[in-house]
Length: 181
Image (cartoon, rainbow, N blue to C red; front, top):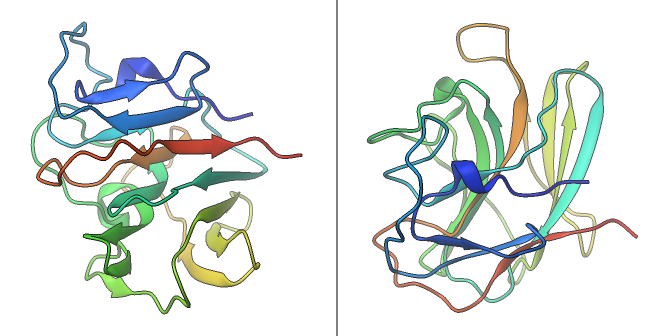
């Protein structure tokens, strides 16, 4: 069961009471400062992190024009500028400005998508060291990352959620974690 960790959420992100949904309010809220919180990017991590085994979760992106979803290494930089890439401990895909889908590789990789993605499935297979992403509505594979720790082999792999760049216009639509039936 994946839930959002409010202690990691950028101050513009509103996390629902049940910790399954997030949206960008466009307003910097007064929240406690801590080392876990992202301060420059509209990111939030899940409370759950994994060091072994196989894990699957889904997120509904609705009609959002920008978003990013994926996996972050526990040790990622959370303060100041950062770049989504495996080299920096992020394995993620996303939509930019309602037009282009990308895998955030060291040099972004365009994704071939039929129609508009609404529900994304993310599978983390730590023993096999891979992380495939799927269109959860039709089962189509979107992209598969090789999951190799950036730097140290220590630490957890944690689900990552983002409403898109801070420069994007805030959307009233929530990005939601979908519980498996």
